[in-house]
Length: 228
Ligand code: MN
Image 1 (tube, rainbow, N blue to C red):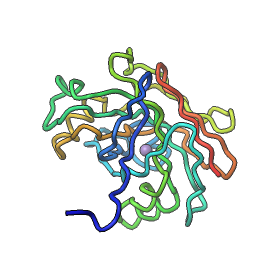
Image 2 (image 1 turned 30 degrees about the vertical axis):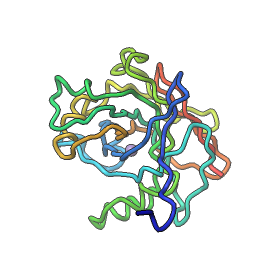
Image 3 (image 1 turned 30 degrees about the horizontal axis):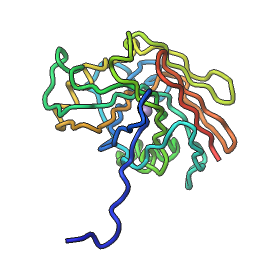
Image 4 (image 1 turned 180 degrees about the vertical axis):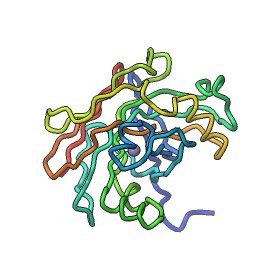
């Protein structure tokens, strides 16, 4: 048996200190996981169960990538986020064992066609066109868990053309990393290669062609993306 055309390439993410790459299976994203961001989006950040959306695996692009300004939007937004990379099959994890399934952590940018997302939100429709477009998931090199120290209290920041736009801490997540893994793995059997974008802090905003976006989390490789 053969395929009727070439099978697609496997999307992958660089790994800090290694020539090998992390093959991407799925990309999960957590919505509204910082209270101040929920408020700026017009929502009450009271602790409701986390909710999720997804991006296709081939939306992932590397650090340094040039991302074309996507079609059919006039309001492309950045969202700097911590990304959790899953390394083992994980079903119904508990908050106590959730971190056992983590391969490592990276810095990501949940690029968003905000106008399409908000239009879908108001109409009760899925967010796919706002969130899951081509090149919408820049992700820097993954640092393996043994290379990461105290990620729960790391600073997270984002700049556009050198101006700081987002500046917060991972300890402000409404749903912590173990809580997200425990909840998500009760909905889906997580598999090696799954990425989880854990949500963005306040300060989201637009970018235009020519802008350079940098995202950092203390202790992890920075992510630089140019919009072209
Ligand atoms: Mn996001």
